[in-house]
Image (cartoon, rainbow, N blue to C red; front, side):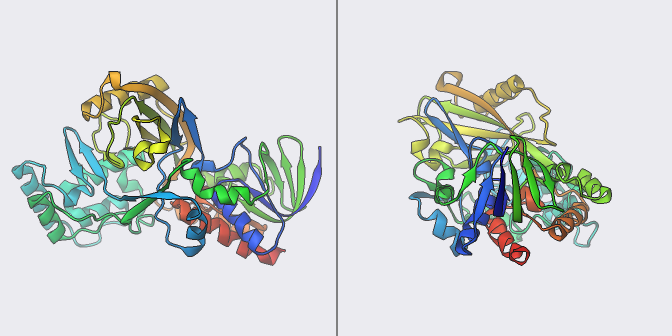
Length: 428
């Protein structure tokens, strides 16, 4: 056992922890990152099977902040238009579907637009389902976003708040809906016009400069944080005495290793729920895939969305080959599916969507991500903020997607870590 004194201890070598270490370097502070896994990068890590590289879930950058771009732009990258598509039962539509109804039969389009024109305008509730019905009307909402919500969040829309939406959902405009119903030629309404992805090495290459400039100790799983004595105990027996502490550990997991957390605060973690992700990664023996990513509304297909590593960068696959990765979401950290069921369903989906036949497939891989996205259950923020207030009072800067407990993109997670250390300066 070793006991080490550290000015700034950072728990977790994902992008938030790396962002904190980057800020520490700017402040000329000694910082060490302690990572529980044998490799770094967190959700931005990747894996390779038989020459096919896959990220852990979809990653494409549209970062705008200078401090993020200064790091990411050190890596040569491809630029992609943010065109995406949606599969519904037996047809493909452009995204977002409400603005691209052209492929539907005329009768269906008329019914959807009539419902939009008679949508409720008064506030009937503060939940996500009510927001959707006010935006798009009942018919569009029931057929598309409410249906998709059950797959992506594994939670009914009526049980979700709206604080996560921001610019993720397109506000309804009659002119856009009518134009997209009458013509297939519609503008791209996505919230980012271009996406960037490294030419080589997967998405993790964007954060490699941060990894290279940080002091990182892998295989250090934290089992106890003694906030009174500013001591961290690790599973391998090592201990650290810290002056400043930054944590990217998911808040429910953090509560388990902080014995000094009051019971009324610890109880709040029971109200913090997240989705987990089953990843089904497919390798093809020929170049079959042209689209960057697509959403899946078909309820017979378990996956919510899929994206192509080979379209992101040809370097992700052997020459003249291609790949897709499918995401299946479950509420909670344990999957409700068995692996064989997921693989069979995904392979059937490829045929149903007319993407590939069995003889085209040379690789089918399964991985589990215990924490995928924060679920914005109604009232969740109240419980989350009580935990974060306690952390702040105890000198723990909790940051990142699951440390801050928010729906953060990779650049936002970077800034969460970067800014958390600024807050920590008063503890120095």
